[in-house]
Length: 363
Ligand SMILES: [Zn+2]
Image (cartoon, rainbow, N blue to C red):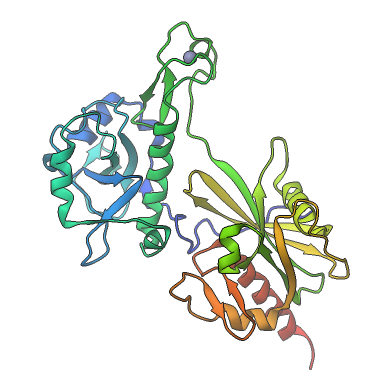
């Protein structure tokens, strides 16, 4: 197994940009929250069913100001329909806190969970926008907008699905502007330990492209899941990280369980937040000896695996995605993930590496 590769902090994947300064240490500062909630420039990004609204003319997400949302939120940090996301790094703003923290305060507002307050008023304001409905809709957002959506979805879904304490069953209370939960029962053991709070969870998922020892081929894997049967999508191997498992071991385990192949080496290349509902995809490249015979009968997750030469893969990856949201190659019958996915980036990485190697070889 190799050590961590050095990679850039940002890359051009959806949901992955840091466009807000989260100032996480200010979420528990009541003075900051009071000023952030009441400032005229503060924006509230509305979500319904965890989906944003967009202006059809330019594809930009709806951003409301305090005067437009009226009393839909309570100006306190325990509101369950509200999450402080951060200070906008891009917008010019007159908001300054403590003479050093600048940027437009940005909140996510769950309008399908407004606590019986004036939700109808909000929906009227939002009539001129279109609510996004699908995964494909989200894919059309800019990288920056998709990243804000990812952060908001993960928090709002977590607040809606953790209403009760997992120890005593009492109701939980939102704190720190929707980024932390505590138990409402003062006698609960959870209130008398160091870890007396519940934070949002992020589930780690390893996703790995597989190449052979001389880096000339990629093993494409077709999932046997019913949804995948229609799409005939060929992609990478992926699976959840298990408790007390390193990322490298998780990759090797998943590859063996799904393909029967033993792995020589694993490189960790990049990660991508994946808000469906709360995952972090950790992109890796694994090397396996292509003389091994694949065995798909361990966990039976895959229908088929196929070694494809990098030269063929390069020509497929260079094609535009079709209306289905995938790259469909008629010559080979292979459907591949589009260029917004980790899988695409991993396959491209192997193809580029293979080309570089070929170029170095003497004629
Ligand atoms: Zn409790």
